[in-house]
Length: 165
Image (cartoon, rainbow, N blue to C red; front, side, top):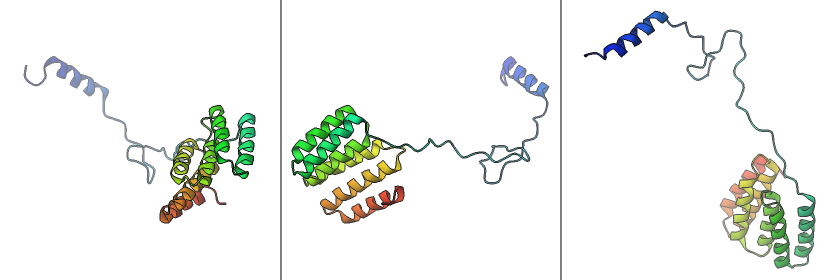
């Protein structure tokens, strides 16, 4: 059959039986087309943003970091790194531990590894502006150590925009 046959005829009959479509509600100024806002209604709310997060160290990881600080202050960077790696086994998703290890690598003049650890911390620090800023500062210091001062200044700007010193 030409024109779609019985199925098309049934669909047309169904649509005609429904009557005309109701008028569309007015749209809010600046809203996306098709997003109706009834008269007198409040404009739509902003999209959901999760609450700010703040990372903390657990008791065991905190004790290990304190120990690593003493070791690094005494110039024993190798042992400080070993201690921080133990802390990472306890809290592998805590950006604060990654930042501490990056600071030790920086003190060893290993800017490339410090940069990588800072970027790992940054990836983990979602939702915590203070931890993100600390990660950006580590990245900036690692870039400066490698003579990439313009890139370091950009990383410092990122850190300052998140949490001023």
